[in-house]
Structure formats: structure tokens, C-alpha cells
Image 1: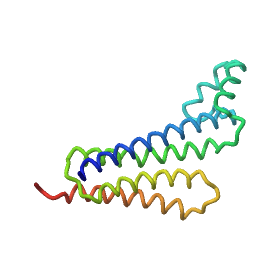
Image 2: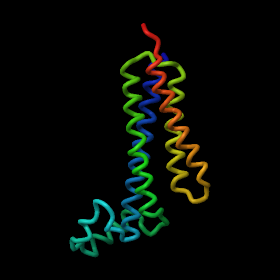
Image 3: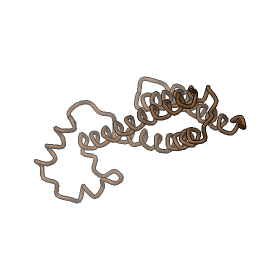
Image 4: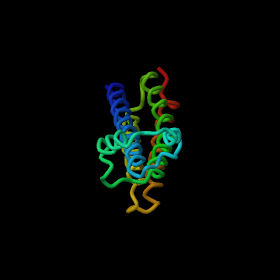
Length: 158
């Protein structure tokens, strides 16, 4: 039973992190449109093309670019941070799922990681919370990763 709970937790956390990633990417595209920031990263080539004002207006309306937005730089930093931390954990969780027989507390580590990473993104984009909150969220995610790694390494032999 613990293995199916663990597999379900891994799938759920992977789905939540995928939705978070998609949301951050859409928010980044929206911020670029809102602030006419087409000179960043991979969008630099678009600045050289003659995009008609009608097409630009359609994207502006479709992305609801008139509403408040985070800066392009802070959104890009949040996406970069996620791509540096989340794939490692998800690969480890998949390996633990495939190896079978995880410790009962490993499910809690997976769920904790998901919560920590979502909270980290929120704190990272918020100007209202001081830096120690971001560090606590980050270190909670690191602790969950270490706990899951230990659950795999210290798994009882059958």
C-alpha cells in the first residue's frame, strides 16, 4: 500500500510542478508583451522582425497584458530556479518509484517538496516577504530531496 501511495504522491507533485512551470512561462510571455520586452533571451529575434501592430494587439488582448504583472527579470529568475532544482528531484522520485519498496515516510518527503517549491515560487515573486522566507522554502525542498535520497539508499534489502 505504501508503494501505491508513494507513486500517487510522485504523480501528483509532478503534475502540480508542471502546472506551476506552465503558469510561470505564460506569465513571462505576458510580461514581455506588457512591457514590450523583446530584447531578452530567445525572443531577441522577434525584435528584428516587422510584427504588424494588429497581430501585436491580438496577443496583447489574449494575454490580458493590461493587468498588473511581475517584471520579466523576476519571472525569468523564478523559471531558471525551477529548472535548476525540480528535475533532479523528479528523476530521483521516479527512480524511487521504479525501485519499489520505499520507506513509508518517503511519501511525506515528496509532498513536502511539492509544497516547498510552490511556496518558494510565491515567495520569490513576492516583494512583501523578506529573504529568510525564501531561504526556508529552498532549504525545505533541499531537505526533502536529501530525505528521499536517503530513503532510496537505506532501503531495506529484500
